[in-house]
Image (tube, rainbow, N blue to C red; front, top):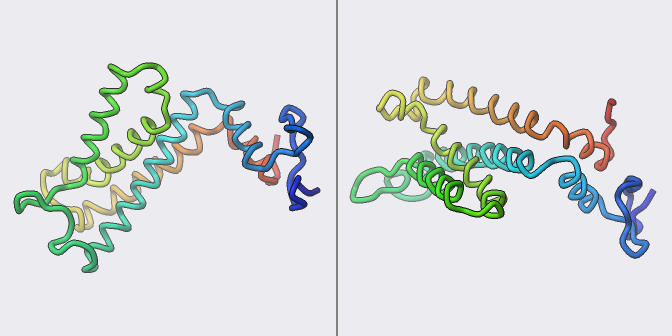
Length: 181
């Protein structure tokens, strides 16, 4: 089967209409399933946890890169000669999400950027959780790294899967993966 451009594709579902006789692309059908299968709060949960996972991974890569001698001299952000930990950015993001939650309109609260800020802010805080719990900078020590890495990886992967559970079978069908029903 080919799509409207002559490329291999998946036949559109009966409930996904074509526009002007042109078959929908996989991304069009995936977008349709996203909106059709998940309500706005479920979409926010998936976006939030995806942002959590991506932010956590990105911060870990960035901090390793800085520690290897790349980036700013002195290793990271400094304000007034003091190291500025990235959990502070996470707290600011969660504060902004709280402001939107208490004063924003329903449309503002449902905006994907709010879910992304929430997930990213949480990841920035959790990444330095050992420091916050012990009030000691153990980021590169075994006790600061092993437990945080393991816990966050499990939480991020599990939450991403469970938050999007109604969406994943439809996404697999649209993308051509076999789906057990």
